[in-house]
Image (cartoon, rainbow, N blue to C red; front, side, top):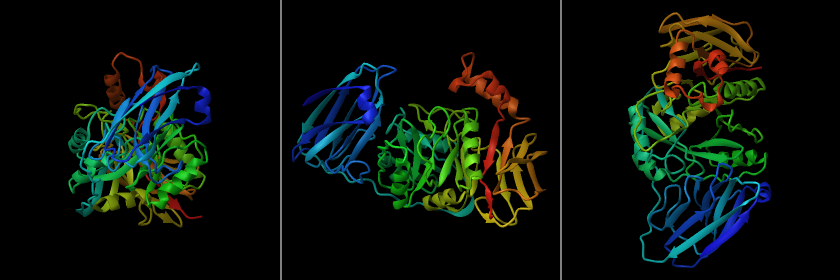
Length: 466
């Protein structure tokens, strides 16, 4: 069967999701869908599917897959499915191809959807079971909390991303493919004490992205109103998951209401990719009284080959957490509590602060003195901040340095940053070596590169009770 529709900017304004219904008879074991339209820089149509259980936003059931603009065809069968799509029982009734109207030209565009159905005998394959691997031993553990495979818009498969994580020496990894959870077909059975996989999904819309952690079920992403951020918050917390606001900076800032999130991705990709904007917004939220754990993630989209270590690969930056053991539950609890810091890479500077025995993420009644431990940052500078801004700056004299720093009545919280000084020239040279003689990436200007402080590590706050 073939259906053609003309979609316009008016359709996009009315609802960024356009539905093409089709009927599926009992006994169907495979559905194949193809999308055809005239692609252009100003014309990008996303692709997905829902089965008859969809009740409209927000639904708990009925999601059968999403590939965004990365694919123009998919299949769903009882025993298998295109990456990003959910295999399993094919319910009879009215299905919908969902088109995301990401970019629609002024004149509109014709879209043609072709659906083919098949009823040949096929097995009914189960969904993957979630293991709960544990590595005993308390300590600092390293991970990346934001990356992608070809289950959404990366070219590389889960096996390559797994290899990249092992190459980087990570202990945990959250694979947050866009609007889908089907990457778990690989990552559930391969989670182990050597490398624990944390359940993730990136809720992806045209006006904001957020990561969901620790939830096995798919979360409805079809947000259309600023207030839908509170719906998202409810959906996640009802399932006892964590909600994190992603890369709140150009080019896709968070333009919804601010929900009661658990975390904020303060650092995404290399520092000069506008992360000072994310950090400034994080600082403003803390100063307004919010308690948000700071996390980082590379947003690495695995290519179709394993890349060598470098500034723009997996675990740049790395989130480092203090855990009583390595397990998914321990990682999630530490993320929620803010028990850690973000650093530029798996071997980047170590940064921890304590106040009177209180660790990062804790609360204290007063903060007269801060204990700081810094490693691998000789020649750089330590900044201490509270709700008013920077309250102390100190040189870091060695690669294994600790200090007790007296403070006079800090406001609301204390947190720390390592800012490049001696290392700055090297860090800028590494970025320029990647760019070569071409234009600076991410719409950076030479002035940005010359003048923006480069952070090498960021601590979570210790909060001060009023």
